[in-house]
Image 1: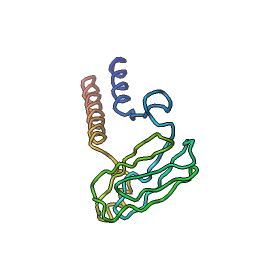
Image 2: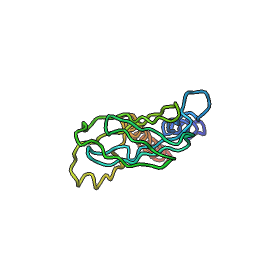
Image 3: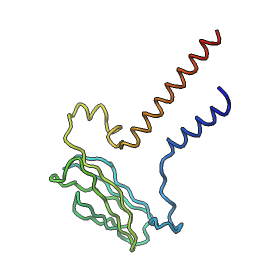
Image 4: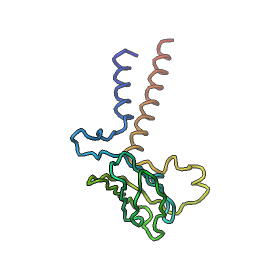
Length: 159
């Protein structure tokens, strides 16, 4: 392979694999000056979710969502909430964090009732993928297979 082909493949792979990073706090982009987490990002209705917020200058962060009752996080301490059992499975809910006049939002996906054997095998590794990530993975696999076939053909011709 030529050096330019390798460089192009590396740049394409880096562009596809690089995650979208949020803007740094305080850079004028409107990003909140505090960090927040929702863990896990996908849960069944009636399941538990841990909420956290750090870097808030106020003593409390208010968290609200259509999936559970509002909760207040005091002094950076995380809290565990139970998702409403009547919440709609298969829907994504926004989880809004409010700190000293600033707001941030994360997404919480509600999974449907699945076969427990499938959930044990996957153990959450594939449940948070969206369509873009699946397509990007498929493109990378196809590119890798194409590269292998190209190299094998070249090796066969060189004999």
